[in-house]
Image (cartoon, rainbow, N blue to C red; front, side, top):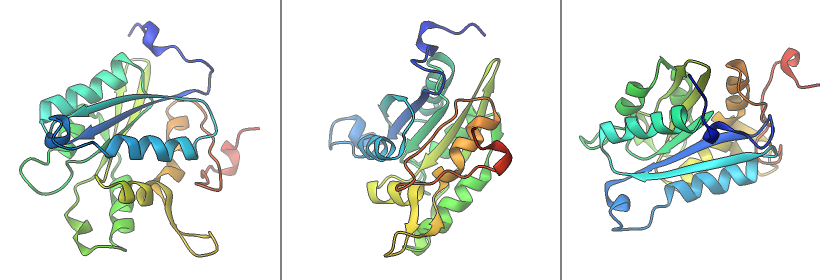
Length: 207
């Protein structure tokens, strides 16, 4: 696949991240979207390496969600795509199915850990269908993860839970994201450890 100008990076380690908020009402302007701002705010506080965001606000439409994921990964070269919203059990909640349509392989561990984190707060966390996939095309792979819809839950899911002394009690899913991206040939991502400490095997630690 021929890479376009949109794929260019300002530095080798710049990560390109797609942020998608999925909401019928927010996409129609009935209320202000909180999903993308929450994702952006947390990532800006966590990432210490260069990054660029591509943001989208769309309705709960399966084909539109899939097309948006494909646009961000295939046309814009995003290494990571985070979605928020549309993961519940109602008929309009089709984000996981649309994500699977765009994916080539499922990464179920992300969904399992997100539900474990949320179950510490609400028993209805078991109703969430959140999942993650890899989208693999010629010359490029991207990780796509479905996150909760509430800003507080987004932060808890990405960052994990800490005690009063700041010690990690439950690992957030973002601790595993950089190494996952490195394994499929993406940029090397570093974070501010006060927010989230990335896990890498000793053999993979950047020298």
